[in-house]
Length: 309
Image 1: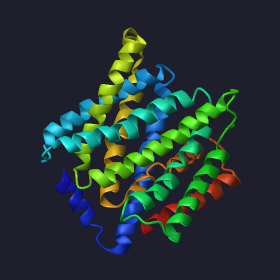
Image 2: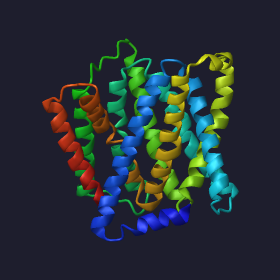
Image 3: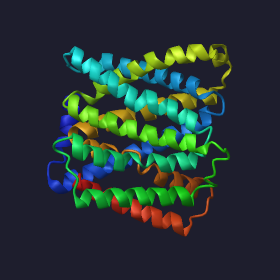
Image 4: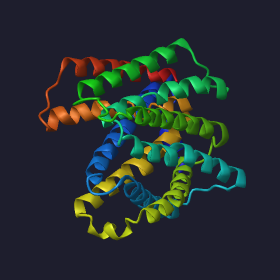
């Protein structure tokens, strides 16, 4: 698997081609996240958050283990790597999944999505202090701010409202800010402690560790008997959210973190609002407004500047 990643990256060995490769990876990751979010919305109509998360991880772990047995990437595990991977699993899956599932009970999904855009600036700033080869410069700072601002405008222009509808909305906001921070710390920890490890092995290991955390939670909630009552469309949505999220998107996330930087990888979901708007305009007869156009332009400019990372 690592040899295939190496062959693909070798196609982009000039500065211009490497910049195009970075932008392409960000756009692909945004598409995968948009598919994942759409699938989660469908599945979420039939099952509670912890059940949905556990079933996603079961599905993703099964797919990854089959692929792992087929591809057989070579790697010699060490106890230190297992400990570091466990830390990353908690920071990038266990805490974010649980915090987001709780946050949406206090704030709108649109506001949650906007607050998730704090992850890139968190990562860029923290990486400056915690990763020796990811120093902050003017180009990174401007590109980060333009991308985040553009994504936020897109979400605002495509939102039916940002009100939390709850007097304790501040709880949801703090939870999303917290998961953005833990996700940033997780990517930095990968860059510092697991650099050079096969992205596919990292993805599989993280999914299995997270599964070990969520299965007891799922069993504790008492929703096991309801699983057999879910309709076919719910299971299809679970499958798509598992393949698009923990399988494909996380492989890309770990690849970008190892190949380029934690700062670049933090932008993996920044183009998701763009795909949401495109789907709405092309297939759902939604109107294209001026804020959407401005946000899309700013987002694309910001994403193109990511070749500085």
